[in-house]
Length: 64
Image (cartoon, rainbow, N blue to C red; front, side, top):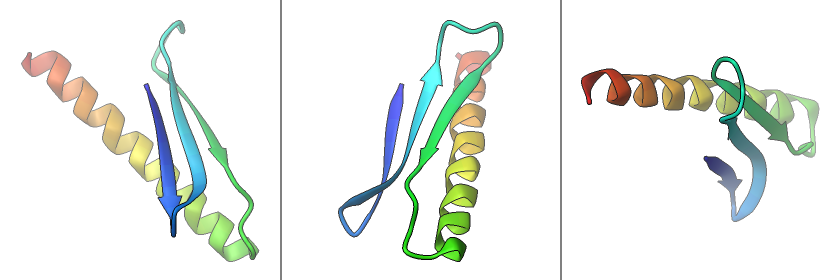
């Protein structure tokens, strides 16, 4: 499962769920922004999305 985060049609981050791991694992890649504060905000956005995605997958799994 792969996701790309876009801002103004430019990729700012990618999220990849690793399936062959002992527990759920995600790989997040953040593109450096023009300033450090924006890069930090993009990191927070990506982590928040991973939490939301994982929650929805878990809910779907248990509620079948």
